[in-house]
Length: 113
Length: 112
Picture 1 (cartoon, rainbow over the protein chains, first blue to last red):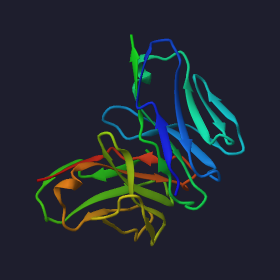
Picture 2: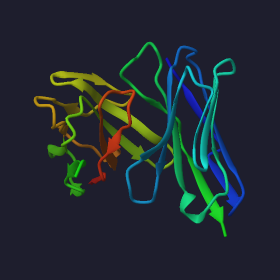
Picture 3: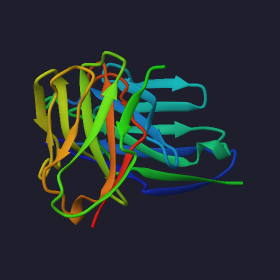
Picture 4: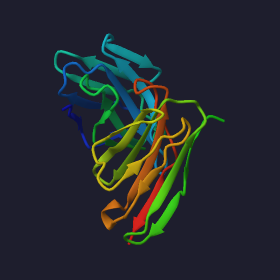
């Protein structure tokens, strides 16, 4: 079945610098890749998603890139701010299970002032 | 206001005492899901439902039951809770699995 690996598990960056979180997946037919942000004490919230017919998507300081050949997708956050500190999860939907989202283990992003 | 509600938010119980955690959404979503979150293990899906009367097992279904008798509600049932089910539980809903999932506030369960 599908497996989603997420790295790093913890990422500490200086405020204003960029942060990159990478996920790899095993099912080459996976076609939907969302990213969720979980702030302390809250449920996860979608921040951006990408579908397999697109290579990159941007929303202000956040971007996601998809490399279908290498089977990985990455979250890029530029000009990081203190409010970016949170746990970020990636996910994918494999073709053999069209109703189940497979999640990465999460990355704790720490923004140092 | 569009939202997913869960009750209770906090629960301390004892081994073997049946309990139900309710989940309700007011967005007319077809897809609903239950997750548990444990430190270092991320989000693990327990059960999901594609529509009324259609449910399927996720990654960690053992010890849990669900039902989807109506679109808005998706209760999680623990028939005989055990200490290893102590966790933070989230309910989520979305239009389909390919759309944004809206998460509830979470239920922190402790089984003694």
